[in-house]
Length: 311
Image (cartoon, rainbow, N blue to C red; front, side, top):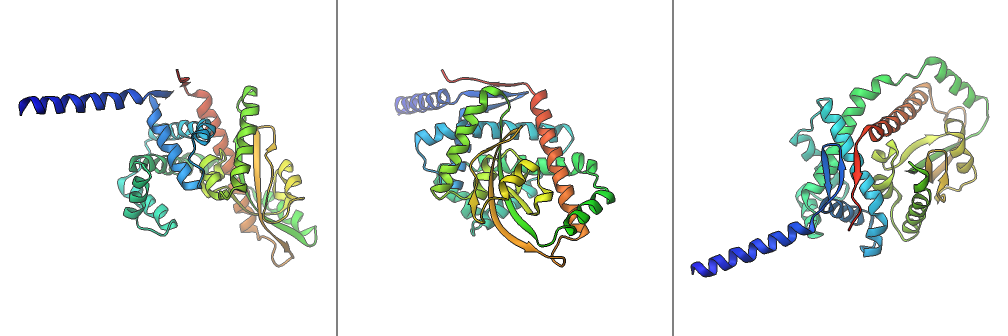
């Protein structure tokens, strides 16, 4: 009996050791690490959420962008922690329930569904914790710096009213940054891959939430209703020639590639033009989005990030 127990223990230990050897550190982010297991789990949850074919080729294709998002999550959590921002268990439970509700199931059913796909609850919790922490960080540290003057609102209002029969555009975006010249082709190829996924039935909001590096990712890429005058010029000239329901090809700008989705258009008359409060909110959101992009850029530039190439 004792020999059988010893043999069982040795077998279990050997299996555990083999599993441990399969997990490696693939990135160091300041004092945190990202393991191959974390990356595989995040890839699984993104594949499941977007309905992406779970092939080995697809996993390899999306792995660099998924790793980027994991690195950003570590940086967001570190920045929030350094500012004394904490996420309570109750806030996390509420966030999980909210995601489950969007899928028309209970929180328990949702986590069971993930488990059936081999996705651990901790994977979802890490992603949601990073989103909640960044939201609090943004509200406490960045939002006080947003300043939309009355003169700016008046200028926007006069600009809109000066043109009759304005067209309103309901736009969503995916932004893929090019951080170094060597990344140019890789990012372009990844953007082309997202276009293929959309053509194959993937949903723009979930792809935006999963892969966009813009602050609008937390809103599934949604930019709300805008006129051409409210958009950056490089975006406005593309939106102007698009049709409702159309998705653009990856568009190169100074900072990276944009994929735009024109959800709807409508003609605005004097009665349906945005009022001053709406103009203020839109301008404030654009300022906040810019501040968030700058903050993430600064966090990346200041961080020690080392990516280990596979052997």
